Structures are given as C-alpha cells and as structure tokens.
Amino acid sequence: MQVLVIGSGGREHAICHALSKSNKVDKLFCLPGNAGIAEIAECVSIGVMEADKIVAFLNSHKQINMTVVAPDDPLAMGLVDILESHGHRAFGPSKAAALIEASKAFSKSLMKKYNIPTAAYEEFTDVAKATDYIVKCDYPLVIKADGLALGKGVIICENVDEAKLALQDMMVAGKFSDAGSKVIIEEFLYGQEVSILCFVDGKTIVPMVSSQDHKRALDGDGGLNTGGMGTFSPSRIYTDVMASQVYTDIIIPSMEAMNSEDRKFKGVLYLGLMLTDKGIKVLEYNARFGDPETQVVLPRLKTDLYDIFDAVIDERLHEINFEWSDDATVCVVLASGGYPESYEKGEVITIGEIDDDITLYHAGTAIVGGKLVTNGGRVIGVTASGVNIDEARAKAYKAACNVKFNKAHYRKDIGIKL
Ligand SMILES: Nc1ncnc2c1ncn2[C@@H]1O[C@H](COP(=O)(O)OP(=O)(O)OP(=O)(O)O)[C@@H](O)[C@H]1O
Ligand SMILES: [Mg+2]
Image 1 (cartoon, rainbow, N blue to C red):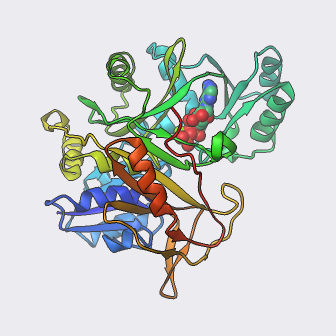
Image 2: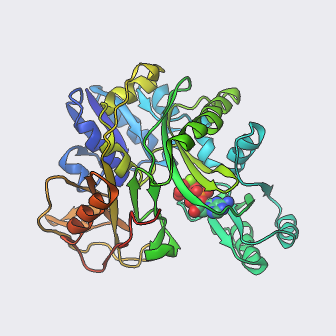
C-alpha cells in the first residue's frame, strides 16, 4: 500500500514513523513534510491548504491508497470531503465534524446540550455586551477566540483591565482576524490537564494511552503559551478509575452527540481534560492528533497504525485488537531562541551521538545547501522510552544535549510535573 500524509510537523513525522513500521505500507509520501520525514517518505512540495494541487497530485498517483489529513486547518477547510468527492480514501473528520475544534462556540454548545462536563461560559459577538459581562465576573477569567488561532486565541485574564484588553484585541482590533469576531468567556478551572486522544469511526471510540503536555515556554510553567514544549505518557495522575469514568461520562457521549447532530466524527478526537476538585471537565476538543502528544503516544502503539486508519475509514474499528507498550515515553521539544515570538530560521543543526532507542521527530527542519537547518519555532522533538517516566526523561535529556543549533532552547523540566 502507498500512503500520503498531509502536514509537516513533529506529529506528521511520528505518524509517518508509525506507518513506516507497518508491513502493509510499501511507500510513504508526505506533503509538504520536513527534513526528518524525508528520510522515510517522499516529500511533495505542495501546501496543506492547496486542495486543487493535492487532488491533482493524487489523480496522477493512483497507486496511493490512503491520505491521512493531520493538521487542523485543512480539516476545518473540508479537505477530507474534497478528497472523497474525487474518489480518494482519506483518514480524518469531515468539515462538518471538524467544527468540534474549529468553533469553540459550537463545541461549548454541544457540551451544554448533551450534559458533557465543561467550564461554565457565555458566548458574545457584541463587544459592548461582552464588556458589560466581564465587569460582573470572578477572576481569573478565560477569554477564547471562537475560531482556530494557532493555540494563541486563549487569554487568561487576572482582572477586568486585562479582560477589556483581550476583548479589544480579539473583537475590535481583529488580532485573530475572523477567528476572534465571536468570543467565549468562561470560568477559570483549577487542576491538572491530561490529554486523551481517541480513534473513532462513528460507531466505536477507542481512547489511546494518556499523555500530558507542557504548554508554556519556560521551566516551571513560566513564559508564553506555545504549541507545546514537551510531553510524557502515561500521565502520572490519570488513574484507571478516572479513565473508565471519563469513557462513560465524556468519551461515549461526545461521539454520540456528534452523531445526533448529524456530524458523524471519523478520525482522531482529542479531549483536553482538566482534573478539577469538582470532577473531570472538558477544556477543549481537537479534531486531530495533538502535537507533541502524538510523539509520545504513537511510539507506545504496538498495533499496526495502517490497519487502524483503514478500519476507521470503513467503520469497522471494533475489529481492531489494540495493544500498547507498558513503557513510558518523554518528548523534549528543542525550539528556536525567541519562540513563540520572533525567531531566526536557517541555523545549522548538528546531531552528535544518539542512542538507537531515541527517536528525533523533526518539526521545523529543512535541508538547505546540503545542510540540516532550522525552519520553524519548534525544531526537533527528542523522544525516549523507558520502564518509567524518570528513565525515559533521563534518556531524552542525555540525547537532547547532543542536538545543537545556535540559540536552541528547551525546557529542563519535561516530565517532572505530577
Ligand atoms: N477554563 C479554563 N480554565 C483554566 N485554563 C484554561 C481554560 N481554558 C483553557 N485553559 C488553558 O488554555 C490552554 C488552551 O486552551 P484551549 O485548549 O481551549 O485552546 P486551543 O487554542 O484550542 O489549544 P490547542 O492549541 O491545545 O488546541 C489550555 O490547555 C489550558 O491550559
Ligand atoms: Mg484546540
């Protein structure tokens, strides 16, 4: 079989890596890919939003049996529907189903309607009404742009002045363009966050092993929010009792709610959970594999990923026998100095001795003039496994020291938080 993966980050490298281990997959393509992905897949220089070009590419490569759409923007645009309408098999939710991530107003109203536990909220399109409302709220308060905003559309406000500024930025100045014309204002939840990714075909939903992300740029959860600076799996705090309760109270109802709304979800449904002292609540849904959660979850999957994708597309996920490794995994993201704000590209990367059991998942890398260089904010995710998180951590950090580029920055505390 031949498979095309759409995307270019560490998540797509981890998906390609897992697919490359399938004895059913003879050849991988990735569009556009990166320098690390190029070692295991043929990279195609077409952008992820260039639907016409992607269709033309698939039409001229009839031997490709499946296209995996990994990032949020093409899913929200409806790339899966477009590919299917041209007769190509695609893994990922339809445009209608991807709305669960693309509109926070939609996902919050879905949770309210189907009694899925989440933070209390109000929705506004009128800045004057929103401003009246924030004066009466308790703080901290969370203000979210409705649409996709690269993980930057969520502002945690400590007081009314900050909330007014956030509303101005989103609703008046158009900081997130259309994504911010509608906002969600919700109560701040206290607790630890756990990510649960699920395979779902509309009839069956199978949670993967748990993971935890570190969103802030600096050690001790300081600095700005980023796309994610590192992850570990499993979570140290997500017990089996919690998992079965979440399955019954959140995971199954989420799939059924989408079916009831005539938005059957097929693909990977990502649940961002907050473990609060008033129970477990959904912070958000994503309609795709998380990045960098995928880099610690897929290495633990022993079942053939191609078989799973194939079963999801054909709605026979119940036939798959899932097996996971008991090993723990840790991924430390090496970022460009200055990320998530401005940073340089084109810094030469040197990779010293790396043990065989370490995987370097490339994100923003490219080959320029025959040299491996940085090409994005998050550059490489160094992933290790071990009998427990501490062992995996030690291995990942030992390897991280041997990947060098000018102004490289990484957190030293990935995997420490409880
Ligand atoms: N109600 C809340 N209470 C406390 N923290 C919150 C709340 N909502 C969001 N956050 C924090 O903000 C982060 C981002 O929020 P959310 O997941 O809704 O946004 P997103 O932009 O869709 O993120 P992602 O890039 O992970 O998809 C959360 O991971 C959490 O740390
Ligand atoms: Mg999200």
